Image (cartoon, rainbow, N blue to C red; front, top):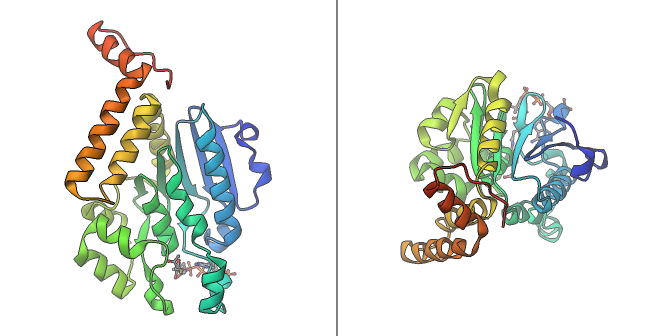
Length: 267
Ligand code: CAA
C-alpha cells in the first residue's frame, strides 16, 4: 500500500505509520522496541491520524494493527510509574483515548500479538476485533498495583459478561485468541500470516456499502451500550428514517428493484 502522503502523511508521525489505500487505510502502532506501549505521544499521533482519516472522504474504513510482537502491551508504564494522583488528574491522559470514541468511520482492530492493558482497551474501542491465532488479550494492571483505566472494567464486562471479566481483571491473567473468540471479545481468529489481508478485506467489504448508512449503523450499535432498550429502539428508528433522506437509499432500493448493482455516492 502506498499514498501515505495524502493521508496527512506518515512522515509527520514518529510512533505510528499510516498507509492510505483508498477506500481503506491502515494504521500501524510503531514502537516495537517497547511492544507498542501507548505513550502520550503515540496516543496523540493516533488520534490525529484517525481524525484526518475520518475527514477524508475517500477513506471509508480504517484498520489498526501493531508492528512487531504486539498490538500494544498497554499504557506506557515508564511514563506513569512515578506520577502522583494529582498529576494524573491534571494531565488528563485518557482524554485522547476518550476522543477516539468520536471517530465516525468503522475501525477494525487487527490484533497480531499482545493486546494487554491499554492495548486490550484500545482494541475494544474499535468496532470489530480480528485476532491472529497467536494473539493474547488481558488486563494485567492488577499485577502492577492498579486497575484498568481506559475503559477495561466497563467495555470488557459488556463484551464478555461479569464472570469472565472479573476473572481476567482480578487475576490479571491473559487469555488466548481462541478463548477471546469463545467469549465473544473478537469476531474471528485467523492465521497470523493472513491477519492483515483478512482485516483489509473486511474493511473493503464495509467500504462497498453506502457510507452514510455505515456511519448511522455504527452510531446505532454503539448506542446499545449507552441506553435502555426502548430508547435504543427509538434511536435506531430515527437513524433508519434519516437514511430515507439520502440519495444512496433511493439508489440502493431502486437498484434492487431494477436487478442491477447499486452505485453509491456517499450522499
Ligand atoms: N510500558 C512500557 N514499556 C513496556 C510495556 C509497557 N506497558 N510493555 C513492554 N514494555 C517494554 C519493556 O519494558 C521492554 O523494554 P526494554 O527492552 O527497554 O526493557 C520491551 O517493551 C520488551 O518487553 P519485555 O522484555 O518485557 O518482553 P517479554 O516478551 O519478556 O514480555 C510482556 C512481554 C509479557 C507483554 C511484558 O512486556 C509485560 O508484561 N508488559 C507489561 C504489560 C502490562 O502490564 N500492561 C498494562 C500497562 S498499564 C495500563 O495499560 C493502564 C491502562 O489501563 C491504560
